[in-house]
Image (cartoon, rainbow, N blue to C red):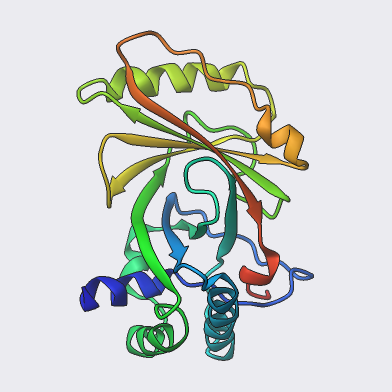
Length: 229
């Protein structure tokens, strides 16, 4: 368990104002983690998390991180943190793993439990517009649990759908490791709650998907980090 928590601490974010944004690297890979505050520890979790990302800021973490709270869906009240736009071997060289783990153990894990941690690959053929996520107020997150053996057909369908989407931004990610597979995630930015709650559904044939989970997340700029250029 200690080894798992130490690995998960690499996903914690850094607080620097969003006035000057750094460009994301061109890599396709992302890491996403979901945390659940312990009962009656929501405020303590937020304060501890912000102390932890202050540690990252002081140590000059070069990675971009985004943070959101779930406001619609089965994971309401939980927190998602992620870093995007990486090459896969970037994850072999995180910022000071021992120091990160120690600070995380002091400030975050007493107040929250790690729910999930996955590595994802962005599917460029199925995505459109600028890569997501970004710092939009809301993020629509739809997770597709595809039936085993149907991955190729599913990817053909979502790539075809992208051709008719125009310039509207949408990013598809495929889970590479860290959970039940095959799993795909569709991200779309929204400016308002109502826009995020009424995103159009993807029409799929029967016998392709076992489960679809639709969620809405609210961006937390004070719990996110984009390093200065």
